[in-house]
Image (cartoon, rainbow, N blue to C red):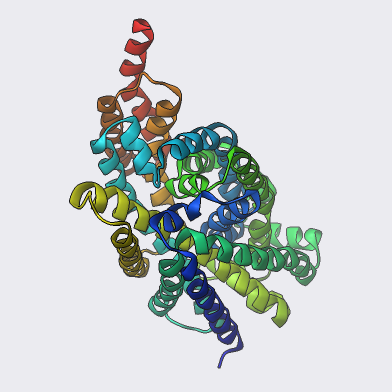
Length: 467
């Protein structure tokens, strides 16, 4: 048996076994949805960071480093900047409301703040969008298996889906928080060791820089943090920072915090860690570019580093680290999908009097369904970045303005919030199609957020005059 496959098999068995053991602690929907609201700073930090370091932050970011250079830092760095705002301005405020009213999902808050149509509209949009990011995690896993074992993409997506669905559907957030802690330890060990070994393999930073810049097709700004200029970095900031401020999956993890201190400290540590981690996969991708410039796809950069540039023991450790990254992000998306559909759609629209045990069983079944749909979509989508860009854009446009304005302004009414969502999302889609993804520094996400703000402005202005 391929030794890399053997390691992944044994690691998968460990995660599934932990999920089975931890499932015994899940007695109610509160345990499944918000971990009984008992997450301290350490567990909140680890489960948030584990969710954030996933396919985009590893395979995708390394691919950007391979193709574009240092500007790839902004993919994860922008997430860190958005997470700082979540930690201090959004998280503590919405946690207090959620604790006071016993909320389980972001949809609970949206119905409380606005009305049921807003809740349902957001749930439907995010359910469709969240499937794409789940697919992105599975595509990343398939990329790894493609390099280390030669398996076809469809089989890699299926295997990744089976593992994450099995352990998450059993244990929910309460078990996933502890599994994420293990995954985070594995990630940290693997990635921190990989950089010095990769640099040694290419002969050091200077040798890597010389080898890359000698190629005529590589631009001189390859080693610049802003690339060709801010117009290249800004779209990442606009796309990613807002989505990490209002992500339902992250907000629902914050619901699980035991107190305000846990929210601020756990979420802010997550943000700082993201800002520091952002450079690691980019440098690994650049190292791959210096030695293997003709890869068939940039997202093969990190798997090539594992198998061709590192000693076996470290390559296998990094393989487990990346596998952990994809699984921890995938379980965060399954968490968002299963809780949203079971709570925001099933319980709200179909069975408001459902028993607690029935709701828990339904959440587990929906996580299996969502995982199956994610596998099917991952086989169809071409790349990790394509999948994640679609999700992050939809998330930012639909939620950023209604959520922030709703938390800080009592003047915004449900009618304008719903209109902002229904107008801005199609507007961003049309703008994307007409401009081919954006007009200069103005991305379709930035355009959609601007339209959303325009739609709610009359409500805010009238409220100011009445006051």
